Amino acid sequence: MDLIRLILSVIIPPVGVFAQVGLTGHFWLNILLTLLGYFPGLIHAIYVIGKY
Image (cartoon, rainbow, N blue to C red; front, top):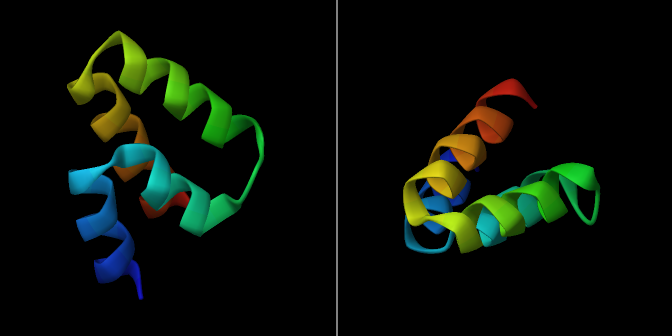
């Protein structure tokens, strides 16, 4: 299941984070980071998926 989340995170980072933790602070932070730049959002998404 984590492989699917990682693939979703590479395509659209907030979707992978949402699939992992739902509508929590991590999701909203990831949206902000993705709006600031694709790579910060991607790095945060991989971190969240790896940690949880």
